[in-house]
Image (cartoon, rainbow over the protein chains, first blue to last red):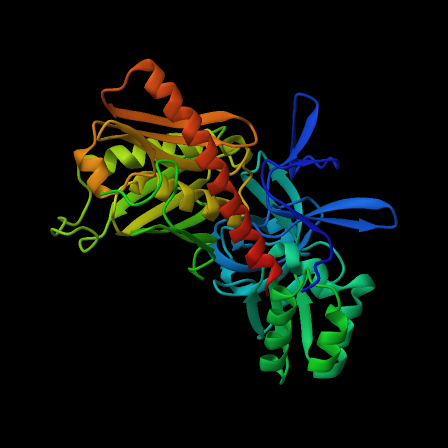
Length: 214
Length: 223
């Protein structure tokens, strides 16, 4: 099948520089990971084909509450550490933490849509809910995809996502970390479509394929 | 008796992403030596094991009880602990450990059928698994064995040549960097013989590298 670009392997010499996925040695640039070199309007871009989610400030992520502390919650956001959601960033009103059971706001197993506001030394990750649209997601279903396939699932100006939403009548929220929250009646169909996108994401002619599926 | 030419490798088979639960996995076989490897991570580590500035690499090399002709006692023994250690050192020197502070990368290599050269086969499989897990690497790791058998210098030893030969050398290199990450020798060799073996190994490693590249590209191109 036709790929959208050229595959490079770790250690292969390339021309584009990207601090996250390439390294420099003796004036030459080499790739660190298996990636695709995409060429768009004379601009080359390196896109890794696999790997774990690396938290970045400003990313909107879908997370699952895993632990409750006295001053906040620990949330699984599909990376190498649990992220922390402090009380002050989660709630609008003031509450007395010594006299309130904070599990009534978020309990273990709850799904939230949050924003990464701080990453300290790749270790401590802070989340926030203080922005429009960030909230607890009631009911619904979560599936996991590779975080590097997320842009494909969303599509150009969220065209792909809107297409799926329209045709299946489901509520879908895609986190940058690769967790996707779905609510509605046609969940099976949505999962099938998303898995197809994940498998064929670097092949050209994807949109037509999905349109046919739906 | 050896039916191959002195510098001929056994039949190589490589396949990636054979284990869906792992982040990266690979199956590699050199003739009758068959290894499955899986890599998990970078993932969380208990606090007392964390290292502040780099990732902790944990490697487990294990031979299945049914892998040899006489039953191998299952579980870790002196030999497998040593091999796990040399594989760990080789991997640590070929990936960017400082990219993943305080986390761990767990690597597992299971020998399911053993016919000589198991450690280099395991290293080849681990290299593919690490690349497929998306971990930052300097280069793919390519490994091969060579030795002296009946007075002749040969590459890719099988069990009989390993047991009855005069010497054996295992090497692991980063082909694009020309760096050596694993080098072990057992037996007696003169300096000239050793240097000649290293030259032969370089050629074989080139062939193995091509196989690795083919395995990865195959996975992505033939969906």
